Length: 515
Image (cartoon, rainbow, N blue to C red; front, side, top):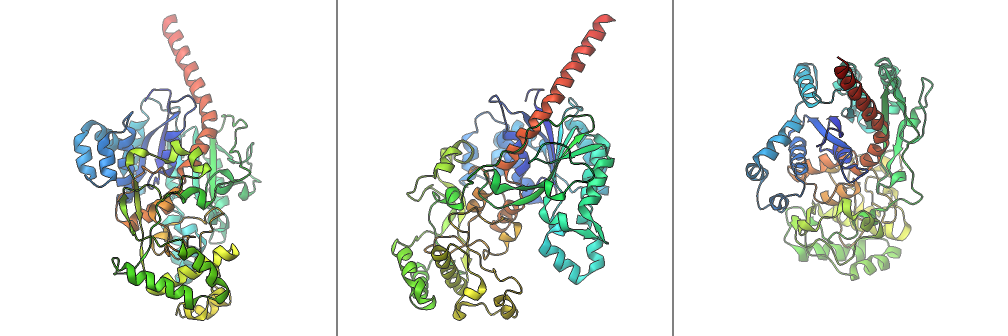
């Protein structure tokens, strides 16, 4: 990397969405930023970071990397084949939990990473967000309000703040869930406490979506980025704060909204069609097919049966998918939108598609998925529980309240074909009820690769670990394509840093010559 590349330190990095976006941004065919260090406490997410960092060490990705994607070798075999690149990746991707006991180690890592460029760098990341999510907040408060107030996840941003105060990066990007705006701790608004802290650390705060400085009378909504407005095929709303050290100028560069954003179909329609299976009976295609056909004939409302038959007559996919499938497409070409992003998403060297295996579902859930997908195809809306035939309602103890709309009435949610998907969150690792595929003939929830497409990860982005861990990583990430757009805004600010560094270097040379 050239010294003109601005270093990026990524804290709470997850599987690397922010770092990937910043690393990929360039104006003149070379990256504007280099990922100097990424820190993540989860072992599996760190393994994903490490593998992606390894890939970035090469100009042309070696074929052995694709052998890893196809499952022919494991990561350790890959690293042994390229020890120098593997060591460079290990210096970048760090497995560490931020907190009082690791402060000395973290500070040492940052000092080493910024040794050559201490005055020109960017800090990115965000603390874990579970404590700020609306559902998690309600559950935790109900169980133990005092424990909720003491939950350390409320205060992990203080580790981020400590690093701001200790190292004073010129620019930072802080990300969290929208629930942060309504979070309170012991009666105090969390967002205003955070903003006061950031101001006191010597920073002016800015929005990525409008120019100017947000002063003490800011509106919290100014920090919200609606991802679907900026070319992301997902309705993901996040609080993202841009901070500049006092004295730096913002300029007028902002994220540019799009008139028409991509839909879920735009993002995933070319992926191979696969089917779910009955849990524990993956090979019994004949029984699975009989259940789907019988449900279409007898269990869904009469007015929907012709629509169900139309979709099922198009043919049932027999494949369950796999961690690697040689067939990359289902006979349908990528959408115009995906084709326009081919350099970002698609990689023919894979020779297929990875992480595209269907889950197993209970027989009753397969029936519900069929009804829900047919209902969405007919009405354009995902059904509420009140829309379900009685025979297909789950036997949960709170089902009556749910049918009345008093709680979780959208327990089964279809991702509508012609709209952006709903937010991909880590709960996708638990079950697929909120992520039902829009094609009735597939009767399944989204695969890891489909979720990764909606999160805008490139197709050659490999997630380490089992399927549950893969889903969890995808759901927790910042969409890297959105991060790349944010990097464009930060790059205009970083150009000031380069200019100032160049001027200081010239002045230093002149001073030496004068002596």
